[in-house]
Length: 330
View (tube, rainbow, N blue to C red):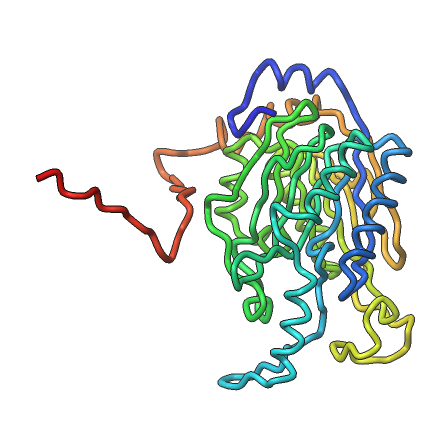
């Protein structure tokens, strides 16, 4: 699979082949990663049977988004109970690569789809909010780690770095992802536009009314298709001893959805859908990408590099670097 650099031949091939894309609005089986993977398998199969060639799942789908949980934290205090909840959350996160990632790769291969999935990734003693990308051949193409967790998310998730900001050149178009409130980072958006992103995936748990105008703005600004998959989570989807909710009614909605697909002109072509688990689909015609660039290319003819410039550091940031000293030859 080609990497980050654009290919005009690949682009023109993609432009001649409209295809169907689906965003899956669903929720994690919290604290039950295996059951979540079974759910992913079934829903990806349903989307593929409906003709989808690209299937996008929400933020933190595998591993879970424990909305409302405080993990026993307040300023200067961490409780033993909070540490126990973090241990439980850690145990349901996944290794990349690892068995769960292999299952997702097989799902992509078995259904011949490009698969984009939000996961909670563990690496050493740290968790990351991550998006994984899989090809129809069952290959893990790569990942993006959320650069900036929001508010209390910083208690449970580490920060990604510039080494995981991929945009993949695929037969469907140039594919990448920006997670939830990363979409409010203008410089990150600018970096993705400069990479030529055409299929801009926005996995999220943000179900606010303000989210949809943001998605429409990004699609119009970047002249790209935006595919936003949001979770739909009810109290009954959480463990019985889950204390991160304000009501114990099993039907109480914690995350209401709002998944959508937006054209490069900022038009909603599917969704938003609220209040249910569902699959939202639309036809993607990348000719619209070029039509939109005619009058607005913010990384090209509509940029002013003589006035504004952005520097992006894509080097991996490591806390410890080991340098081996060669033995003396004297």
